[in-house]
Length: 246
Image (cartoon, rainbow, N blue to C red; front, side, top):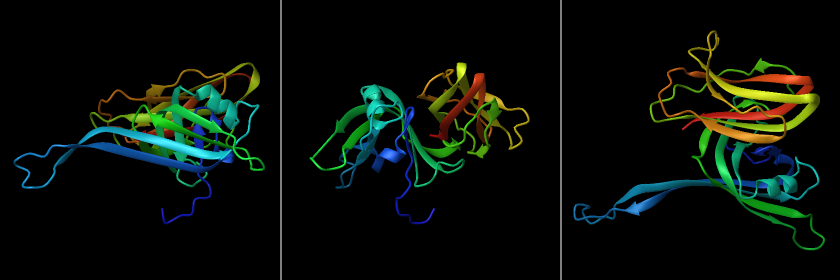
C-alpha cells in the first residue's frame, strides 16, 4: 500500500458501523519499557519489554435514536468489552487490511459549543492484543442463506500464536427469529475440500458483536475463511468479519 490520504477509514464497534459518524480514528499500541541496567551494561541503560497495551480513540458527529447510531451504541457498550475492527483507508472488502481487537469501551464524550455540529468522542482500551489481519466478509453484502466466504491465505498458526476472529452483526431482518451462526474454517489449500472448523461464534439474532481466538496450539493449515448458517423466515443479515494471526 502506497502513501495515502485518509478518506475512508471504516470503524466497526461491536454491532455499530461508525464510519458515517466519525472523522478521526486513531490506533496505538505500546510495550512498557522496563529498565534492566546492570554492571554488565557497559555504561548504557538497558531495557526489556514489559506489559503490552493498545488503544483506539475516535471522534465525529453525534447521532441517536437507533441501535446503529453512535449514541445508542456508545451507551450500550460503555464499560463493556467487545470487538473493534478498523480498516486501513478502504471499503473493508475481503482481503483488505484490518486491525482488530477486543477492547473495553472506557469513555464517551458528547456535545459541545452552540452552533456547532454536535460532536462525540470516545476511547476503547485493549483486553486482547491488537491484531493485524484482513477482512473476511464485507459489511455491505446481505446474506439471506447459509454459505461460505472467500478463502484467505493468512498462513499457518505457530505454537503459542492464535487465530483471532471478529464478527460484527450490523443489521438483522426477517421473521420467525432470523438467526446467523458464523464460524471460522481452515484448509490445507484454497479448494477447502475438507475444511476444519476452528472457531464457532454464538448464534446471533440481533445487532451485536463477538470476538474469538484459538487455543494457542499450532495449526498447519494456511487457508482461512468465514462461513455461516442462517435460519428463519425471509432472513437477511449485514455483517463484517476480520481474521488475523498474532
